[in-house]
Image (cartoon, rainbow, N blue to C red):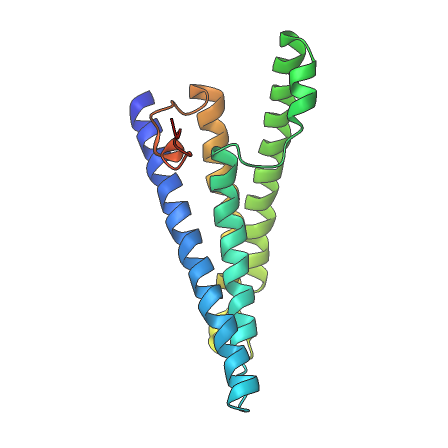
Length: 172
C-alpha cells in the first residue's frame, strides 16, 4: 500500500510538472503572438491576454502542488536549522497543519467558486465556463493535500525519486 501510494504521488508529480510546463510554453507562445499582431501587423487580437491569464491560473495552482512536494517553496530554513530537534519536529507539524488548512480551504472554497461561476463565460471565449477556468484551484488544493499526506505518512520522497533527477551533476 505504501509503495503504491508513493508511486502514485510520483506519477502525479510528473503530471503536475508536465502540465505546468505546457502551460508555461503556451504563455510563452501566446504573449509574443499578441504583441506581434498588435505592433507589427497593426491588427490586435482580443484573446491572447485572457488566454495567458487562464494559463497562469492553471500553471500557478497545478505547479504549486509540485513545488510543495519537491520542497522548493520559500521556507525559513535558517530558523529550522537554528532550533533543536524537538522544536524542529513541532515546527514541521505546525507547517503540516497550516498547509492542510490551506489545501482544505482551496478545495472547499475553490469548488464553491467553480460552482458559483459555472454559468458565466469569458467574453473572448464564450464557449468556456468561468467555473472551468477556476477548476485548478480545488484541483491544486487536492494535489497539495495528497502530497502532504505523503510527507506525513511516508516521509520525504527517497533520493531515487524522479523529482531529484534534475539536480545539477558534480563536475568532478
